[in-house]
Image (cartoon, rainbow, N blue to C red):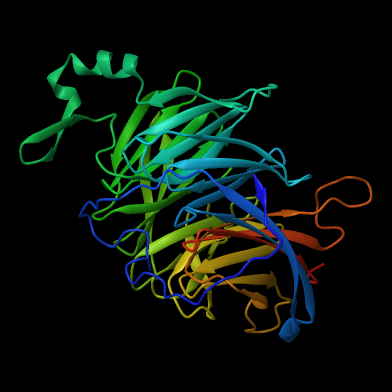
Length: 401
């Protein structure tokens, strides 16, 4: 990995069609760039409006966009087109790159114990095994979903085929369009796709257990609470809530508040608060209704972004949002008095030249070596369509702490 002493960002305009995940069910073509070079640079920035000093590390790739970021076991996984780069967060050392030119754009990354799960534009889900070794390659392709065994077993019976186009059929265990989101919980994995379906997978043998036609338009995101309640967000502007009963997922309710495509969601730790963001530039805060297990009400409406909300993450009372307006906003919990909003925007991070497509974050270690919010220092990672990953070191001073 080449280390650069300087970095620059030109003020090019972002793509006009990048304001949402998917706003129609028309499939799109994509030209892949398979370059794997990247560079690291460190500098400082002072955000004077918030009196917050931030240390920024910029990871620059030669590919035109960062599509997804995720953290697992102190490793940052960054998807850039059809590649995934692994970086050690403690040392900022490059660990590995795993890719194939045939995989298509990586849309989502999830984790299940020692496995890394990736969703791709080519309608596939891939399972990777991390095995540290002296060689450069640490991540090895373990399986592709649906598995060959599953396809053979299901392919025998005609009833297992569904019509996806006028003259084309596929097995119901196969996604027929871009796999846009993944979530893992309690031995199950949930995948959503622009083909409008939610599929449930058994992680022990990677078999597909169920397929649900969830929305009337493309599904952009999925999250699941610890008690197994599943939320799917769609280009139809709706969020649907699903509960598992007798090994089948049933629709509990539909949440309607957004005026256009819903692109991103995040849950708090106990699943009582849901955050959703869409092309209407708003973040809706949903809270569970009293004495109800599943139903949620729109409690707050967070305004501030001047573009579509493309990504959300919630970490210990801190909500972080990324937008097509090229900024990252940090929202903290507020002391609620009368009708005062429960969240306020404490920091605005700017500097990307194109829309912020993905964000992730982690609390820095305290003097005891624990990753928590006791010291109030958080590292925020933002990935953009400008091909940069920016690492922001921010000081969180919440009124709830």
